[in-house]
Amino acid sequence: MQEEITRKKIDTEVRWKENLINFYRMARKKIWGLTISCILLYFLLFNTPFLWFLASPLKISEAPQKADIILVFGGGVGETGSPGKSTMEKARYAAELYKQGYSDKILFSSGYTYVYNDAENMKLFAVSMGVSEKDILLEQRANSAYENVVFSRKILNQNNYRTILLISSPYNMRRVKLVFDKSGNEVRVIYTPINNSQFYDRVEGVKLEQIKAIMHEYLGIIFYWFKGYI
Image: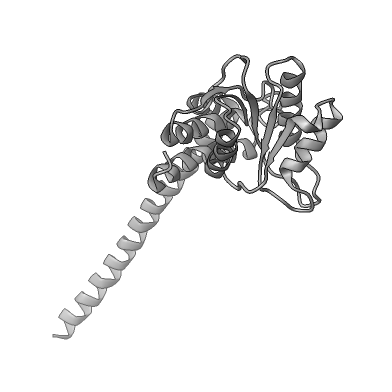
C-alpha cells in the first residue's frame, strides 16, 4: 500500500510538471501570436493607406451649387473657449462660398459651449471675413450630428429654405446624410465638406487621433442605427 501511495505521489508530481510546461508553451505561443498581430496591425494602420481606404465610404463630396442657405455643423471648442482648427476651417469655407455667391445666408449649428458657444465663434469669424451679420442665423442647442440635423431642419422649414450647402468634416458626411435621408426629403442637401482638413492632413503620416475619429464615425453609425436615427 505504501508503494502505491508513493507511486501516485510521483505520478502527480510528474503530471503537474508536464501541465506546467504545456501551459508555458501554449502561453508563449499565444503571446508571440498576439505580439506579431499587434506589430502587423500597427504597420497596417500607420504605414499604409489602409486607414484612408477604410474611411473612404464615410466621405461624400459634391461640387458647390447655388443654394438657399449654407448650413455649417460645428466641431466644438477647447477648454479655454478658443475655437478649434476644424471650427475655423468650416467657418472660413462657409464665408468663401458666401462671398463667391453660392448663397446669401449662412446657418451655423452647434450647441458646444465652454467659455463661448461654438456657433457664435463661427459667426464672429465669418463676420471678420466680410460676411454680413444680418445674413447669419444660429442654432445653439445641438450636441450631436443627429441634433444638428433635427434642430437645423426646424429653422430651415421656418424660413422655407429648400436647398442647402452642407459643410462639415469630410468623414462626418455619411452619418449626416443617413440622418437627413431618414428624416425626410423636403430639403435638397448638397454635401460640400472642407476641402483640405488640417485634422486629416496626411503629410506627417497617420495619427492616433485620426484613427479614433474615423472609428468614432463608424461606431456612431452603428449607434444611430440602433437608436433608429437612420
